[in-house]
Length: 399
Image (cartoon, rainbow, N blue to C red; front, side, top):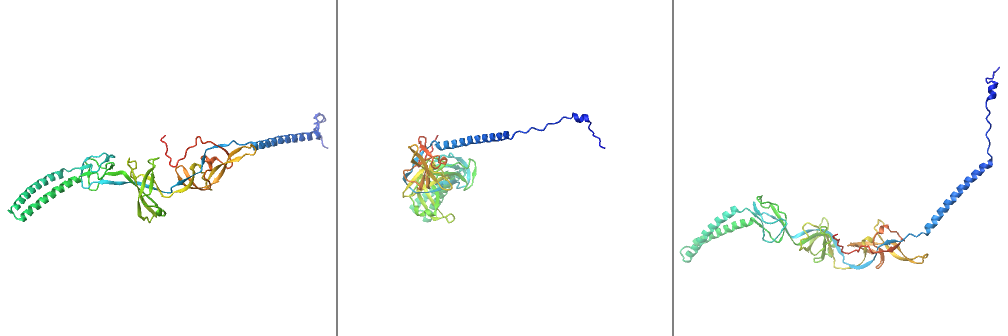
């Protein structure tokens, strides 16, 4: 018989939990409907905002971009062949010692102009001068003997053989004196032509051997420009053609000369033709060894369309320019300027301009600068107040 572990008093005193109250189904339905209505209202407001923005953006017209313009021009360009070369002197040499000796005096100043015949350096000639005095004494004695022999021969006192012997001794002594004077003269190094002396390579007291370099001497009143062109140009080249030369060492200056020499043979290793032009250089601005850009002007002239080089948009798929065209706006009823991207073929470049061989016509108006930021159909206005002026032969300012 099982015994109830809970006493009747404790069982009666345990609290009783009432069952949970159930919400009516109608209230839940109303909450769901309210949430849906709020969501629909929010979605509708957002759709209305987006639609308004789209319609407003369609009505908005961006302000026209300000650009600088240029006109496609036509001119007769003279064809030219371009190359790079080096400046060399018409007269230039390294002055060397002809005989050995010790430098006794340096007469010239390094970098100074000298005249033909000026003494540049002197070598020690003390030994030669002593020998010259001895030779001159022998010469005087031989001369006296010869004069007496001449007088005696005229009176037929001596034989012709004795007279010839006296004459021969006199000639030998004269040659010895001339030889000593020549040796002394060779130890006075003189300028062979007018020019500019370089930096001296020796100092007083220094011993030099025959052939040792002493100083460079460059005649700079005229200079050569040595350069080469491909063999295909041989039919267009002849002496007398005008040549223009520029160099980075003297920016903004152009030197004009003549083509004076065309090599008779073509270099077999490079298949190029060596040429030489001559330039007047009165102010000695050009120096030997300078790098030079050379343009040989050909005699014929070719009509060429050209535009500023800054007007061309260079791209891998093709070069283009932006043509400015006048269009009519139907909404506003006014004329406007818009851009049309036009692909072109470019030719040679001269100064600030580039030749256009195809794609544009003379007189067309194009954008002259800032083309990288433009696009096809963009409205623009023209303002050339601050636009730079391109030139065929630009000269940079000193400022």
